[in-house]
Length: 221
Image 1: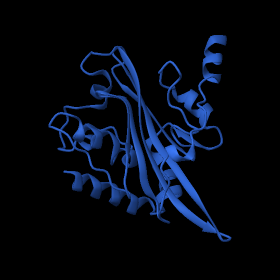
Image 2: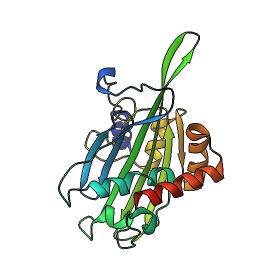
Image 3: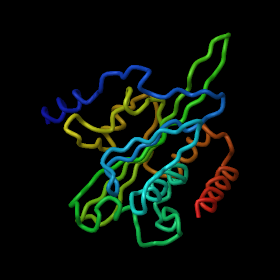
């Protein structure tokens, strides 16, 4: 127990210089970065957007479609159904498969996350507003199911938010909740997560937000 607590206390990374993290340039929210940790063949991959846009280049089989499958619109949809994850609407590639890779791993914890930012002007000063939204996932050969938890926080991965211990072990749900503290929320259900995400970031309301997610799914196909 003491060793576990000591490990957690050592987990907080030193704050990174501001130059290492992108900053927003518009008053409307735009995606700045995204990350995939311990899913499919991704170890710890960070992707950076340019003016809210992301271009993925590479040969067939290098993971371009898989990155989209794991990130968007999943991080808005919070639905693990294979038909909603697969860009082609198939059912063979489940999130359990993305984690365990047909028995390659006995158990595995992974994360996907997206950082959004915008500028905010008040009293003659401009500040930057950030939200990091994400999902933690856990699967094991024994349980044969995927446990998912979702989070929304003002903290930034690589700045004041770490998803890995120094020994490269991903955080559990409880450890993530402890680290985020009062700077956000950790949710057990996709519904609660979607409601808070819409309220804090999009402001569309339940029906319009559902329409947006459906449209993104159709456009991806």
